[in-house]
Length: 89
Image (cartoon, rainbow, N blue to C red; front, side, top):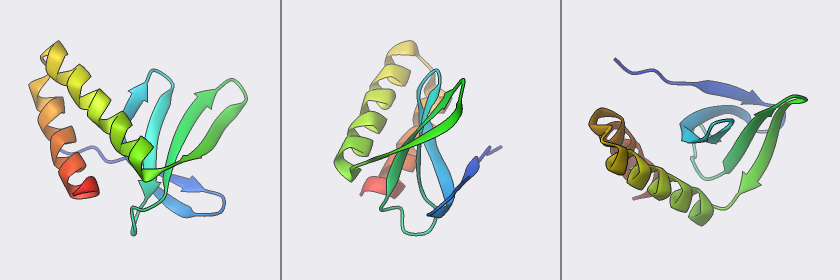
């Protein structure tokens, strides 16, 4: 079962959730082109969108992959690995 998360950006439209980066931070990309990436932080004042480069986004996903592999979460690791391949290769 796949749980996909979408978010509506005020300027760029529908964003697709790539992965969770930290407790209150998630990585999103534009739905169709997957060329613009945003670090979305959920804080006390609401959502904050921070644009980041494609290389920074890739690095964040690779760090998350290493974390999942070390923690033994095989199913989450495999799912993120597929997203990584589809998005960055």
